[in-house]
Image 1 (cartoon, rainbow, N blue to C red):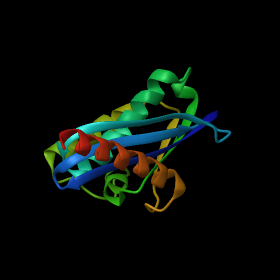
Image 2 (image 1 turned 120 degrees about the vertical axis):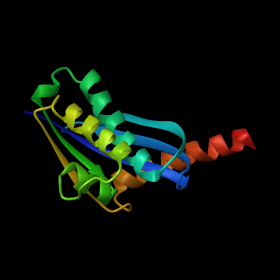
Image 3 (image 1 turned 135 degrees about the horizontal axis):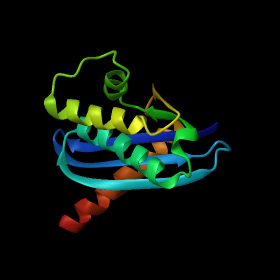
Length: 144
């Protein structure tokens, strides 16, 4: 079975505030397959974190030849999102519950998906975080 590693991050300046979501996908050899950042407008940090996971899984489902033949290891620095996705935390917000259900539905497209929490300092996360902050800086400058 093929293996894909994904790093996701969401950023919000204020909560809610200007936000962005992004991911990086690596193949089994460690080669970067896709890096992507998206502007969300004014959203919460938790929304941005969940959207990053959704964007990453959607990209993989659409761009991998045989998603069912792929084991996905997804890393996020959001302990809340990972623990909600793994069932360790219950979800209080209806909006977060809907995002959670979208992720779990997308996860069915793959052989398996494992969600793990890593510190923000992890190189995979910090690279995505840097790109999100660059995007938010550009958006802030455009509004200038």
